[in-house]
Image (cartoon, rainbow, N blue to C red; front, side, top):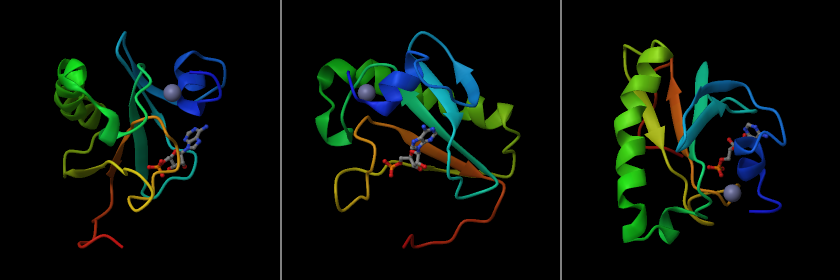
Length: 113
Ligand code: AMP
Ligand code: ZN
């Protein structure tokens, strides 16, 4: 989708610090890390948010969930991690292309702010 920063990253129109890529997803380091390890797992398909997924996306979302542990292993998050999806205005979603934050290498707090 034109003017979508994560589509542009997926299409290599703008650079990113790549962690993992295949035909369905791309994973890169967040520009403003909130933890010592903070990467974004992003489907190459443009879906605006978790609120916009359809039954057609079931396999893709399942695929992402299964890949999380492989990416966590690659990043040596053996002590655990947090996976976050921000959705919509109250969820503080700033980039309107669905993505999952994978954070690790520090002890997280709960509840989130
Ligand atoms: P969210 O607030 O959940 O929509 O998260 C969007 C995230 O994308 C933020 O953590 C930003 O720091 C990050 N971000 C925005 N632009 C870029 C970029 N060009 N490369 C890497 N991360 C980015
Ligand atoms: Zn997009």
